[in-house]
Length: 125
Image (cartoon, rainbow, N blue to C red; front, side, top):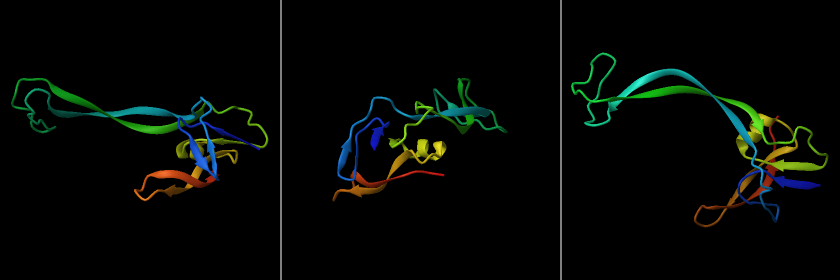
């Protein structure tokens, strides 16, 4: 069995420390522009609303509001090798939905609450 760490940091699980392989698996993000909102004036902070224009003559900020969707998983081999587990982020595991694409589970913390490892691996179906 082989464990390939496709995160950007080392993973400690089951008494092992697994170094990153150098390739980070990610989920492509699809961004759909839905509308724009008007923010405060970038110079004086004057607030404008849809009903009331700002009283200053400066430039008001226009802020895009987008809808995000998860796209395809990137950087995981198309043909997964038998007896190999690919350790990825939780989001990548959720989107991949494959028993060989796993994330850590059961975080182990030190006395300050910092994560020092994990008790196991998990996949989503």
